[in-house]
Image (cartoon, rainbow, N blue to C red; front, side):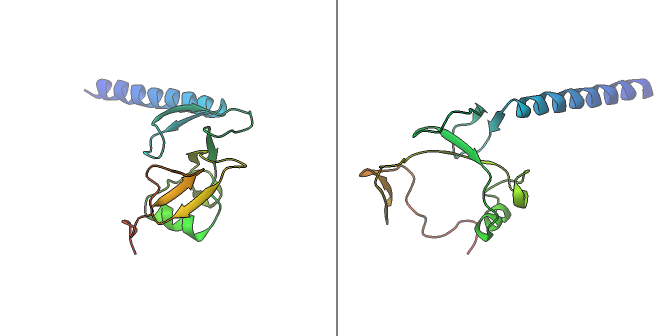
Length: 127
């Protein structure tokens, strides 16, 4: 029985190490996995081209109280960004020359209401 347990432990440790190396190499190669609902779930590759309207961008949120509160409420994860925040990925929906308006019913770009942009009347995570 002890021999089986030992082999199982070696297998788990080996698989974990291989997984960590593969993840590290993927990260170094610019691969990112999104598991949140804010953009489609999937594997993304960082590009060096200048971002354009419609592209996704990845960034570290600034060290501000609002992001600290968002992290405490579980809206953003922990990671390696300053402040201990995780990287964020968002889609560029407006660019230079576009007209952006914030109204009670949501955000408009060039007169078009962006889906799901209506502000909530209250934060479901707290006051």
